[in-house]
Structure formats: C-alpha cells, structure tokens
Amino acid sequence: MSKGLTDQIAYDALQNFFHNKPFVLFGAGLSIAVDSDFGMAKLKEVLCEEIPKKNLNNIQETEWNKVAEFLKKDLNLEAALDEVRDEDLIRLVVMVTYEKLRELNQKYYWEILSGKTTWPALPLFKRLVDGLPETDRVLHVATSNYDLLAEAAFEKEKLPYSTGFYGGVCRRLDWEHAVQSMTYTDQVNKPRSKKIEKVTKLKKHIRLYKVHGSLNTFMYNNEMVENNYWISECPPGIERVMITPGSGKYRRLHDYRQALLSEYDKTIEKHNAFLFIGFGFNDNQLINRLFINKLINKKCPALILTRGSNKIMKELLSKNENLWLVCKNPDGDDESTMICNSRYDLPLCLDGKKLWDTGKFAAEILGG
Image (cartoon, rainbow, N blue to C red; front, top):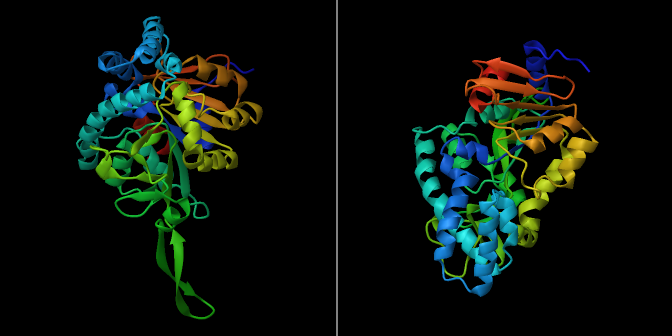
C-alpha cells in the first residue's frame, strides 16, 4: 500500500471519476446547508415537543414513551422510531414532520427560485448535466429528501428535470409520458437527399427519483399523484406520501414500493459509478442489497462528498479501494478538506480548500 496521497494524485483521481457518468444520490446534508432546521436534530426536537401534545391512547403513549427513552440515550431518530408500530401514531409523525418541513420549504423554495438563496449543489449539477454525452442525455438522481429545494434550484437554472409525474395540476406517475415531455423537435440536414427533416431529440435533463415521497406527493383514487396545490392543505381522505423514519417507514414503503422504488432499483442496477452528496448512509432501505453489491462486491467507483464523515463511510472505504471520500478535515476549520482512499495509509489534508462544499468542488475539480 502506498503512503503518499498527494494533491496531484487526489485531483487526478477525482477528475477521472467523472469520466463515467455516475448515479447521484443526495440527502439531507444539502438542505441542512441551506438551513440547519432541515436536519434530523431539529426534527427530533419538534417531534418530542409536539407528539406528547396529541390525544394519544394508551398504546400510542406507551410506544412514544419508548421512543423518548431511546432518544434520551442518544439513539438516532431513525432507530428510535422503530418503536412506533401503531398506524395512527405513524400518521401523527408524518403530519408533524410535514408541518415543520412545509414552513421551511415555503420560505426557501421562493428564495432559491428568486436567487436570494443558493442551493449549494446547483453548480455541480449544472456541470454534470452540461457534460452529458450526446448518446446518453439523462442524469439519474435520487434523493431521500421531502422538500422541493432541488426542484426550485433546477427551475432557477432552467435545468430540465422530471420526477416521473405527467399531466397538469394533478400529475400522475407515468415515466413513459414524463420522458416524452423532455423531448424537442430539431431540424437536421440530410446530405444525400439535400432535404431538411424534423427529428425528435431528447433534452439533456435530470431524472429525479424522490424515493421517500415528497411534500407534493399524495395517494388519490388509488394512484400516486403530484399536486403542488395540496402542499398547504390536503383535501380530506387523501393521504400524503411521505415515508418517515422508523419501522412504520418500511411497512409504508412496502405499500408504495412499486411506485417509488421500482425505477430507482432498475437504474442502480444499470450503473457502475456512484456519487453520494450530503448523504449519511443511515438509511438501510436505500443502501439496499443493490448498493451493497455494487460498492462492496463489485467495487464500483464511487465518491462521497459530504461535510462530516461517520463510521459507515469509513467501513465502506475499507471495503472498496475505488471509493473516495471528500469531507471537512475533522481536525481543521470549515476551510479545510480531508480526502481519503483505502489505497493510501494516510488521508490528504488541505488547508484553505473547502472541497467538501459542492460549489467549491465543482469549480476546483470540474472547472464549473
């Protein structure tokens, strides 16, 4: 094993990583960069304050008391909410989560759309979309986030994107029709016939899989729909599709799996390079057997771009020599970076380089 990870080696490796178009998965870290209240720490605080105020029955109160006990022991929210089994209590968790995120989303969606606030990963996504090859004009992206900050940023930058929903005010999930909305007609010269023909082409665009649902996703007439008008007030009898943490998440995800995850699973299977942005790897459902097979068994090239690292990331690093981690140097300030790869004994630490910031990364590594 070589010990000398240099600036040149690291930069070359990071640039070379993008020679193969990656599947992109981003998490709460990008929303937290806009406002820390988007994070699990704040959600934990809000749930602990609001759920006990509800009119809980004995079973619900017992389950929530167990959650509270685990949280006092510093168990993460995802694991603590495993104690929630009651379906009505799950709905209360969804509603409290929704209320908090709705307020934040309403504020920052318009700020991002108007340019007052910047979604941090926009420069990187613009660079990735602009760099798509003519033969493969789709960037496949997934997120566990419920908010619409990414969509606002894509709208602001006029980056075409599709979430798989097609139609007018109440859009239905239909990837085939959604792809058709990403096409345009171009005129092409035919040298032999000396004629100009009209040809349908696919726009370079983002295909965004919102695998845990969204603030604007609902079940209506037994099918999944997207409706922005219902974000503020959902009509009676219509269920929000937001898969919250905990065991209830997996039961609900099973019910919605075909709609939310079938295309996501197929896409992961087709990819052999993966980019993770602001994603903590605490979600066992998303880091499923497909990812484990790709990252550990097949040792596919991968890059984790995040502010803070954790044990899971370090374990993945140890099992895949083609995986790179770019994060803040834990022993430095916010203007420092640590770059890790298991081929090298020691990480590369850079002062005055904020490469874990997606905008700075795009400018420094990709020239965007």
